Each structure stands twice: as structure tokens, then as C-alpha cells.
Amino acid sequence: MDEATQAEAVREAVRACADRVEAEKGYLTDLDSAIGDADHGANMSRGFRAAVDRIEDADDDPAAVAKAVGMALLSEVGGAAGPLYGGSIVAASGELEGGITTETTVAFAEAYLEKVRERGKASVGDKTMVDALVPAVHTYKKSIEIDGLAPLEALGKSVDAAERGVAFTVPIRASRGRASYLGWRSVGHQDPGATSTLILLETLRSVATEHLDGEVEFDAEAEGKPAEDDEGGDEAEAVEVED
Image (cartoon, rainbow, N blue to C red; front, side):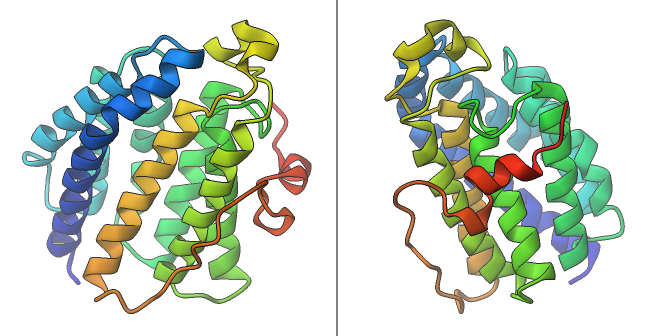
């Protein structure tokens, strides 16, 4: 697949993400109404609509398209989410220069996670998007580099890990972001940032599956606390990078 074809595949993924975020806008807003400022759904929807417009003018290489997405989110998504989502994509987009390969997708995921941590100063257990993102990225990397799985199957396991991470945010107390102002009243609520992270990963998996003819079946098990081997629970704490 040449770079122009890869760039179009990334554009397709962005359009799919925009459609899914728009469909989930009300759900994300409801989650954010409980422990935030009730704007996460609207912010993400506005950001991805802008991204769909910007990618049409981007050069035909995947790094340029990814950078255009990040710039749109950075400029259109309000509050802390803009720098966290958009700025981190901009920083990670350079990993895709030269094309999309198994190695560059791992590098992109790791660079994105590193920037999210750097900007948000959050760790696993703080009840933020990091609770979904850390197990997702670590599982993807481990599935490829240690377990030797194909990227699509690794992505499926990454989505399952993120889903467990989202569930993990429900019973814990927030210690970062606006939700932390609620103290113990934040317990029992699902984090909207972790949820939107899962939504985007699920959409990327769907698009990737279509491009690969849906030949890989995924493990749908995603209930309960993150499993120790997917680095979403106590083990993730052990590998957390100190701020």
C-alpha cells in the first residue's frame, strides 16, 4: 500500500471517528455532566467535524493527515481536552513519516501516550483518559512485540483492555481534573475522557477490520477490573512513569 493509499485510509478512519463521536455526543455529555462541566461531547464533536474538513487539504501521506487532525482538535476542542487529544496527536504524527507499518503504529501509540501523560500529569487510577489509554497502548505493544500477534488482532486486544480500563474508572475516586473537585462524590461515575478514548479505539478497529476483510475475530470479554496482564490495574501502576 503506497503512502497516498495509506493517507486515504487515515482519512476514512477520521471520518468514521467523526460520525461515531457525533452519535455518542449526548452520551459523552451525560457522563461529563455528572463529574465535569458537561461539554466533552460537544467539544469532541466540534473538533472532529473540523478535522474532517482539514484532512481534505493535507498532503497525501499519513503523517500529514494525522497532523491535520491533531491541529484541528487542538484549535477546536476546548478546555484541557484540546491539548491532550490534539496536541498529543500532533506530537505523535511524526512517527508515521515514511508510512504506516507495524513498527510505526507502535511508535505512534507510545508517543501519543507519552504526550498525554506529559501534558495531563495523570497516572493510572486518577480517573482520567489515562485509565483506558495506558492498558490499551501497553497491550498493543505487548501483543505485537512479545506475543507476536498481527496488528489487527493486537488492536482488538487493545480495545478489550481499554474497555476494562473504562470500567475501572467507575468505582474509583477522581484525583485529577475537574472531577477531583467532587472528592468521594466522583465515585460511581464513568470517566468521560476514558470513554471517548475507548470510542475512538473501537472505531479505528472497525475501519482496520474492513480494510483487512474482517478475517480476525476479537475477544469480546471486557467486564470487570482490568486484568493484571493487560497493565490496566495494579501492574500498570508499577510501570507508570514518574512525573
